[in-house]
Length: 74
Figure (cartoon, rainbow, N blue to C red):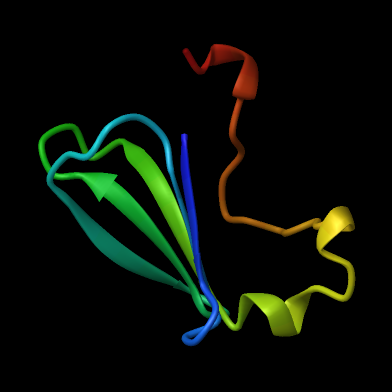
């Protein structure tokens, strides 16, 4: 899993697995999902205005348009 936060842009990205060709799909409320170009599988998420959505970074809870089963990640 790769997590990156751009403080200047206030943009958080989370990707599962290694880098691969993908495309972004805006799903509303400043959230973008990223899909694998070949399989169409969701492989990541981008969240604009991330810091503005969180008061305490230790207690982050986001409502995303999909769920992640962390137990299935290698």
